[in-house]
Length: 532
Ligand code: G4P
Image (cartoon, rainbow, N blue to C red; front, side):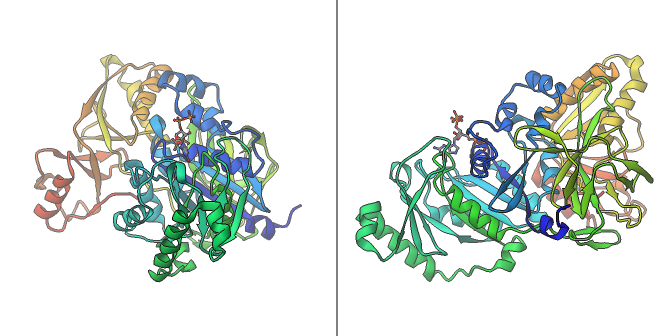
């Protein structure tokens, strides 16, 4: 059996985050390509499934496995064992997108060089920043007309309040994009051809002071520009501080073009050298070291399979410590019982396979007969740990949902509750009232469509949905005995509601009404995420 420490030390588990169309799929594909995990670019499933219309998506989901395969990709490169976590964008953006980030040890943020930071980049960044994980920035599409690299860097710093450290610097952009200057080695990497294909590309390296060679490679104008830029960058006195990278306070920035492969392999090498092996995790019993002998894992995502027997689900677990072995008995902390995990699966680039073992850093998919909930811990009975739950993220889209057939109250309530417990939606209701009319909160519109579909097919209930004008939710941290919530002074577009666990929340129509609530109700404490 492989050496535990060695296996864990070579694992790198990260998420790639971006706004749709910035190039996440293309970059992922190229990384897999360099890792030899796929032969042809265009093979990453996520792209195809993400672009399907809703109805197709449901069909795909029913066939099991399509979205599962695109959730995690594992491949080898340079002695590292790499797990890339997919964070769905496009129409299937959902709370799962956020939860997936809980399983990553670092994040690669892909930014379109012509557009800079976009709304979905902001949302995903916020979740990474909350965890203080290292965030690496890949500024993509330099082969097209791009904004000035200085502007892009400044935007990252001012909008995200982080430091940045350009690891390389682009030489030209658009048709003129010749390559990058690698600051660590002090060498220019010039790419000779614009190559859109699936092959690796070679770069010609050249020192900055070899002027004749540089002029031949990139031309005197770009060479001069580069010399000025390098002087400016080096003079700016930014320090590269590895500690700050580890805590997410400083983001190493890379420029490149995923489509033409420019700068992809240098990025991968540098990223792997800097990013972290599996990180320790906080548990109720204290921080757990991933290198411990004892196996432990937590559930971060549950995939229902959309068929009538909705108990047929896959629970995704991030192995947090030790080694997982198939056919051994483990302990499900929240369920309070031992179990053998059936059909443990791991996702390779394009297929699933049953695995015999997995290590801290890996993601495994377990057949779930309906016992797991998001945030649950599985560990060894002799070494019990309970990981901190996965936070509940603030929904941004709200709808009132009621049943069409008033006779079906029981099925409606059962369906709503079960689907909410699974973590597929969040549900709220007026304080003290039942589930006559339910307010559903989600982060992606597809979640609402999936809800309707599942209520109809699994519970036999047709529903009516009405969009509500709320956009924000905040959890009330105050003890309800100390603050009379029925007397809160709220704006006209705000409302007090409760979730199915009885927690108190406020929903708001706009950002300003959150400020209003805070100003008009001294002592009121509101939170954007809720730790479960
Ligand atoms: P996403 O996963 O972040 O949504 O982005 P994706 O990789 O699907 O890329 C979105 C579009 O941007 C694609 O074009 C892709 O080819 C293009 N793209 C990605 N990286 C680069 C790059 O470095 N340079 C240039 N010029 N384009 C890039 P599309 O036309 O939407 O799709 P396709 O027809 O190319 O498949």
